[in-house]
Image (cartoon, rainbow, N blue to C red; front, side, top):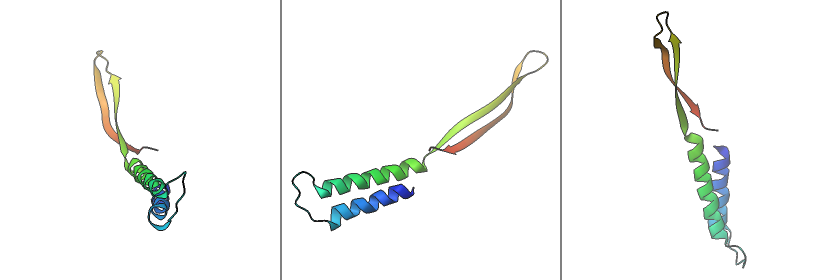
Length: 77
C-alpha cells in the first residue's frame, strides 16, 4: 500500500507544483498517470481472494462425504 501512496504524492507534485513548458512531456499528464497508478495499486492491494476448501473422504460403504468445508481468505500479492 505504501508504494501506492508514494505514487499519488509524486503524481500530485507533478500535476500541481511543477510548472514546466517541456515540448516532449506534459508534467500534468504525467502526474495524473502517476496518481491513477497509485490508486490502482492501493485498490489491488486491498482485494482479497476467497477460496473454498473442502476435505472429502470415502466411507467404508463406498460413499463420499465432505468432512470439512471452510472459506479461506488471502490477500492478493
